[in-house]
Image (cartoon, rainbow, N blue to C red; front, side):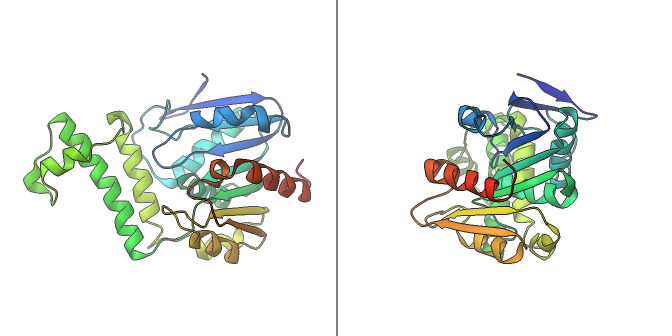
Length: 262
């Protein structure tokens, strides 16, 4: 279980294989890269190297003093540099797709291609409010569990807050809230106007039955990315790579072959 020690944080990652080209997975909101390890046996058949990693403050990565989108992207860049990965097909799911967009804008030379799965470059007012509230409720849940919540300061009564207590560990809450706020911030600071600067080939996939991100975000991405290929799996929900595993794998490999990556 390797970790990369940076200036202010330790980033946990898992990898298989060697070489300067890698398939890199970026996990969703409040999650970790651990679940992608089960995908390694398939992808290592087609790529010399496969990597998954945990955002700062999540999974087995350490807590940090600061959390924001550019820092999450910078952590990935430094991880790639440490592992001597010069180019990657970066696959971001949901929140991971937001991180991937930031990474592609900040570190274009490191991107062989992108796969944006069940994600978006912008959110509307209602979605922004809901994402922000999701982070705040998680924070309140943690405070309720620790006994530090003064319910009179919030709209939600303490009993309701406690009923909504989820599985987020206290040590992960700050990064989780930053994830949620990062998505909420796509209303006032959307990536959409900047997508024209992403020149790497991009495969955009979404689910027609996705109740979390919706398929509309995938359509917006495809319309604004100059090199995008779009496919909506009409009977899939959130996270196409798992919802439609075989179809997704075949499409991703074809996409990489078409672009001379593998």
